[in-house]
Amino acid sequence: MLTEHISPRFVDLDSWSTSDMIAAMYDGQLAACSAVRPALPAINAAVDDAVAALKRGGRLVYVGAGTSGRIAVQDGAELRPTYDWPSDRIVFVMAGGMQAVLQSVEGAEDDEEKAAEAIAEAEVNEHDVVIAVAASGTTPFTIGALRSAATRGAVSIAVANNRGAPLFELARHRILIETGTEVLAGSTRMQAGTAQKIVLNIFSTAVMVKLGRVYRGLMVSMRASNAKLLRRAEVIVSQIVGCAENDAAKFVQRAEGDVKVAVLLGMGWEQTEAIEALLKHDGNLRSVINELAHDRT
Image (cartoon, rainbow, N blue to C red; front, side, top):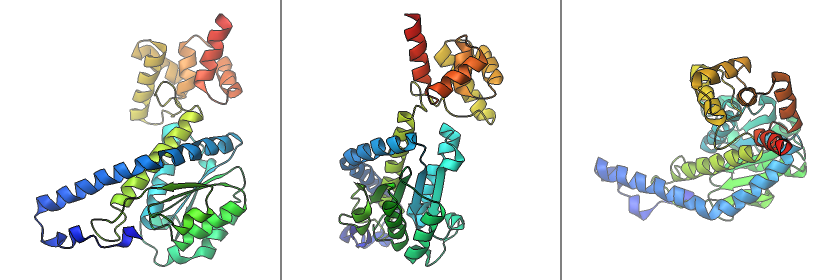
């Protein structure tokens, strides 16, 4: 496993100047970004498969241990505020439980049986999308979870940083990001972690876009639940509708913070009509607007 190897380049790292050390770490981060490009076709295939499953009512299930698990949890946790993805359609299977997000739970990552139990308790099925992340690709907990998910027919996705990782043998989609040796041998929170975060960012964002939760590059599915998001919602509505921001604010208020409904209100729809149209089109604002344009021609 290259992620665990000592790099000859950095054996004297602790004797370097601060500036040389930081420059080396920066170079490592750039290398991590570059390592993602060869994985783009695999990410593409995983996204399309995941979208099809989620359209059938499936859930996103994030699996991991240690750093990889925390990165996975961060990605999933941001889907509700950004895209209004339902909380009951996100599952976290973290070695050691959610307490391990903040504090290491020693030995938890070695418990393959516990992982299988967690998948069973979550009642993972063929409509769910399970994303298992492990830098080494050998973590027993992550392997156990993905094996159990695969036997239940779930869309199984493995993200790992070592070629030939056992985790890949269990996955329908194999996302390899070869970040190689770390500046600090085995410290996969560095290059490996950066690359994992990029992959998950790309994956989840693409999935949400394909599910119609983005319109014209804007986060139209978010809920204006605080002052910052309320201001953002007003700007989004103003940009799409082409109205003044004070008018957009009124539409957002009438829509109770629902940006899509607010946009349609700004286009002259009645609130009930707007809600019904969005339900008809599975919340896809572009589809609603396209149908309106078609009806007018």
